[in-house]
Image 1: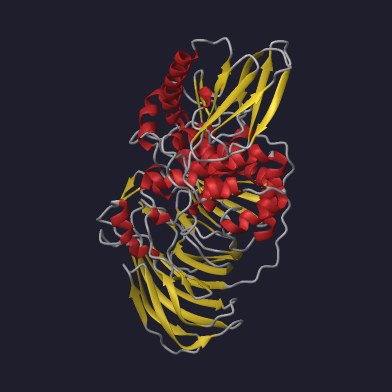
Image 2: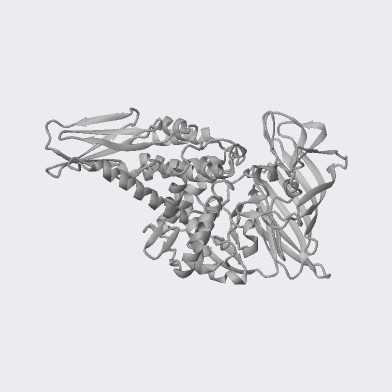
Length: 624
């Protein structure tokens, strides 16, 4: 999911300037060859066959669902625990609303248009009725089974349900005759050794589900254009002004769909993958932006991590009034949109910067890091959003290497990476590891997005780009269509790099320390470098001598300071710690270098710190 906070207010201020100075459109033409489609053999665990009707006037759903669940563990289960996500939008007493204050990513809940879901019948495939008990705030429900389902056994359950879609503000719902239908059906949690992994719907939390196969039949008015996870599998005219459209998807963790009578479509082929863009007429100008970013994502991420195996990627545009549905990921389907950065000012080509491309790239990245490598987003959000944001930042920096991957504003250029760095620098003590609901709203953005980007970029700086990409691709290939966790990533990273990475995992991932490297003293024949903070990151120190020669030293960063002496070399001119700025998690680069003859260095340091903070204030205007 794309994070609209915490820069939403800053971007409102930027909008006035952007109206006067349009962002450069740019073009996306990555050189890498397209990924080749090749679908692996995946054991379906949770498979769904759903027949649903949409009442476009009442904004309601009526559905029947057949669920088949396979017990792949060594422990039997005697009950089923379902997510009923739409009940989070029922009223202001739910956990979601208590935590969010009825706000989500800059958008507000409309109490006149709540959302809810009700299971009207549940029974086993053989007809035996089950009793469903609502849990917590109604976003979970449990059904006891008459007998245990043992290892290797499966259970089939049939459900009937009705649902009211909310007005869009948090991923799902409607705006006028536009519908984005996500988290909409009774969905099982994940059975793990010892119990069901299923939490109430928290405002910061996203999702966790087993892989399975889906068949979904949607009945709605004939004039509506639909899109869904997977591929269309047929369409039937019902002869009463409605039609039934079918979709099938294999080896996915969720199913979402969209409908509007105003959608127009365009496609692009990329190495056997069809990119389908469903756009609204007022956003026709985004076609090249979206298709270009989606194509680049499939090419680059396929080259870096592994091929996109599905035959289609659907990108859904959302209306300006429904931006709460934008910037969200589902398997084979993402929502993008001309993401609003200007409050009530209409979204146009001239005031979006590169937000269209950035959002598309980020959500496409989730196809690798969540839709295929399916982390537990609720328990370890840094993996899901962090890996995705790192990937999409890398992509945008490759496509726009002049430092303008976020904003081009006259002579001012802001990169995606710089915006994340600014966000981190302003809240560096927020821990990266924790459950989604452990964090306040702003802190969640730092913990799940910006700090992981800083950490992973620093890891890449220490390991080198080639090794880092081998780590990421090995991890992807090993855990594609599985549920890895942080320790699984640690094992792969240390195995591939051949290094002990305690400094990264214990220091950055599990710890909350910070780091600022400085050159504290340069004398004629010695250099002293120092460290502020508890992090220990290997770093290079470049020493320049008066005859033009240099020495590149390595420092593990364990001690508070270290002195390098050169009694038999010419006099030292200057020194710089981390000359290539590989340690991006360093809080202040302005004090990384020092010249021996710069006697006014303390004053320069003060001024550069002030200028650095001013620069970062400008960079805030570039944040997502």
